[in-house]
Length: 50
Image (tube, rainbow, N blue to C red; front, side):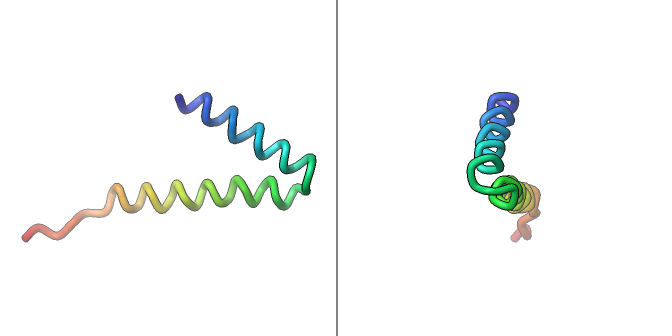
């Protein structure tokens, strides 16, 4: 599953890089990285017991 996601994301980023500009390609990847970081931080955040 992760490999398919990596191929899809790389394809979209490559297409944006080629068609629009390198800034859009890298911006797309940076946005996904930021979203993944937020999800990871929320998933690992401990809730107070009470």
